[in-house]
Image 1: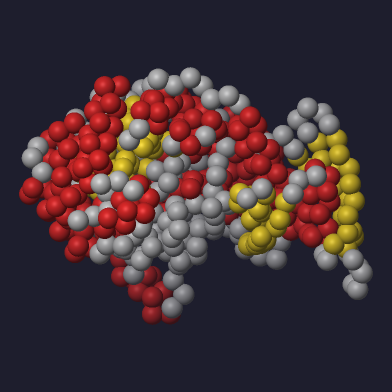
Image 2: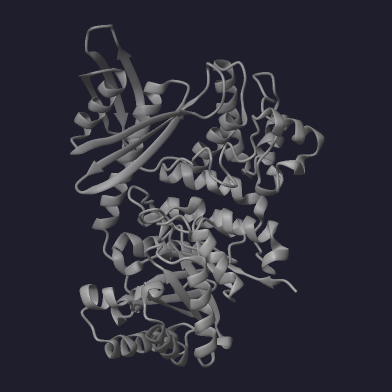
Length: 514
């Protein structure tokens, strides 16, 4: 018999807490829609009490997403719970997720609370959340480092108070699969009424065992897995959704469990999140990395030609990847291009398609051959639109060996303002970024600049990724162009827009909660 495991995605909450991965409200809604299309069961949209901007983002997701449960996180305090409920109360299927730390190290150094007080606060928090919302999840933070008998006591209190889901987090990625299996077995054996709630697991990847620990919990009876797209999250990240989903799909017989995820939507969703956060997918990333279905060894290639399953335990099409490479050029028509876009897992309305097709034709005039990566970059750029008010109207650079490079930029604001400035630098990219920085007068500090090819050949498009620090916060931005200097300038401007959007959100008054 195969059981159904719910997928609880926390990309918009825990994933966004990864340094530099903050998203605008529009980007959060866009990712949430993609998650709903992926058939995610629960979307944790954010932590509304954290900031007015987060409150607004969660509320926007709650209003616009249908099908999936929309969840908001809160500490076990009335103020937090009121803010969370205020943000999600318009959701088609709302859930409140309350948490409180339980481990000895957290009790002593963070909370400075006795065990009895923690048990009382956990019960009160769950009870109050349940008075507002029928669906309430409770998490004992740092559960994997909590004494088993005390963890049992806190979980028992939460169940008695009305929690409908009990989540057991490995908050710092400390446990091992065998230990975690024993933790879940212990709770199932000693907590009265636990059979009436859903057991959930939330693992971090500090020791590289988040997926393995989550699978161990599933073996022990967990029927909800909390994870993120591309495994993004604090420190080393979270359990990777695409990995847990495909592990349960490929090894369904071993685990006796499966998910309702539309696996063929995994790759386009992973690419979308990568583009929005500016966090590239490593080439050797399981399931969705460029090398996941690549074979260079002669022995492997020989086996693949004879029978694909000799070296592939899943088909690339199962996760939304295509085997074909070079297929389109400047003579390709609308129908062929539309089919290629669909094969890559993207759905565009007529207006979006017209914009993408026009850009495709313009790019085809610059490149002899267009690859899947080129098309993906065009689609993701058009789907995302501008992340803020500033756009690059003109860029001119000069570079002579042995002399400082010079760049002139012209920026246009959504309200019609125009800024022009010139600057010198160690190279054309440096000069262009300095010109943008000086034109806008922002205290920006470039921490990292990366360039990678999104396709093949000498005329390949280059994706520029920048990491910038501003007023104590880290931001990432990205852009794609056949011109690396232009790509770098637009990526830098992407960061500027993120900063501007974050400032605007912080200035807005928080909506009333309760």
